[in-house]
Image (cartoon, rainbow, N blue to C red; front, side, top):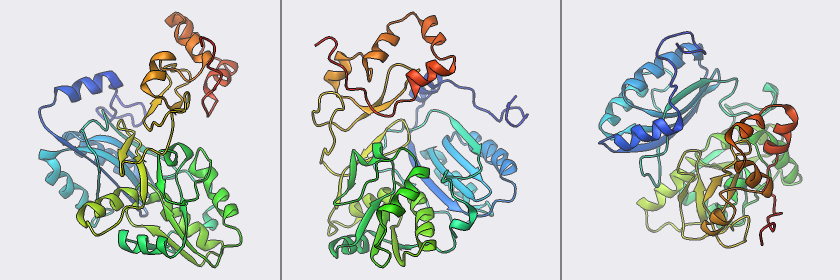
Length: 350
């Protein structure tokens, strides 16, 4: 029984380990895709149940958010069911002309279970409804028009979080040092103050955050706002199709699935957070109480036991029951879960 819906078979209880084991036993290939749309959905909970049944029957895995304002989806689709999946999506009255963005690099292991959730917003932004109008958004630029705008000196803004832009970005982009999209919107507006008449270019992973940002900036007096059509994912696809296009993206595109990143260029623009060597693969701290996402090279992974700090090394070496105790209580959570950056005090054993 699904605790969220009260309906049988509507909730996937697989652990990560169980899901990965089932993936390894599959005898077919998958393709990773994403799509989004701002569209008024009358009954998102009802649609959630319908999609879960249909997509679960097609063997689809992924993470999908539904809200009254639309859909935001990242999925892994069995290749042999691709046609049936496309037909299913396009048969839905809300998604009749939906376009799909195909992953640049794909080993088929992007997701390990199907999760569909109903939320207040498909991307949490903290905005009041009178601060934007999603029917009044910026112009969508393809890769060629985007490159031309860059060459003409337009101001380009990365609408992703700091851990995304640290491994890959467009040349000369403004990259706000923020943890969430909610933090980023007012920060970008403040950073762009005085440039209301300039050409502003926005980009993100697949386009959804730029859609809301362009509406927000236009509402606040920015007259010339454009966004990269299809985001970094589609930009890379267009580069593959047209060799005459130059690649202005440096490094990797961060993705929110098990792959963590897709390489767009050979540049490595980031460094291991612990030793400073060039490196651009994210990991999570081994201490599950912490789970910090950070950059850790193979040498540091061995040296620091897959942990981000001395505190976390000490925790993972405690008995398992003691580790579980540390997850309880406000003070323990504050100590082991709230930090947003690597603690560089790692000279304990040097």
